[in-house]
Length: 95
Image (cartoon, rainbow, N blue to C red; front, side, top):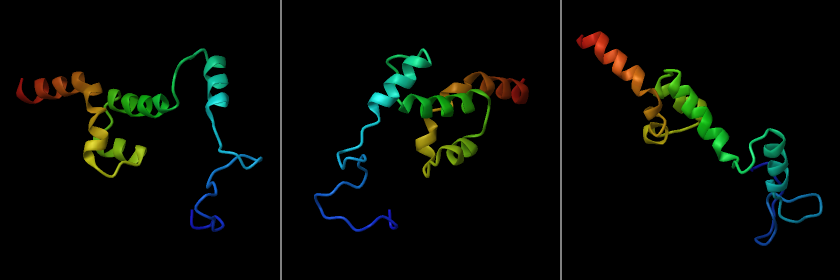
């Protein structure tokens, strides 16, 4: 943002080539339909990433780093994905 030219209060930071507000939705809708995922929203990719990491047993610290979270609570929402792994650890430790 620091490298962007200074703009007035009414000017856009991210605009399209015509100087209008940029919108990614038409492109996203087309991509989602081509991928046979109609109706999905872009943020689901990010959530899916965190969920799959947790499901694979990746530590919460690595999930935080991977997703750019600064607070543990931000990545805690994905911890539910590896409940089976937690049960296995408890069973291994406590019999």
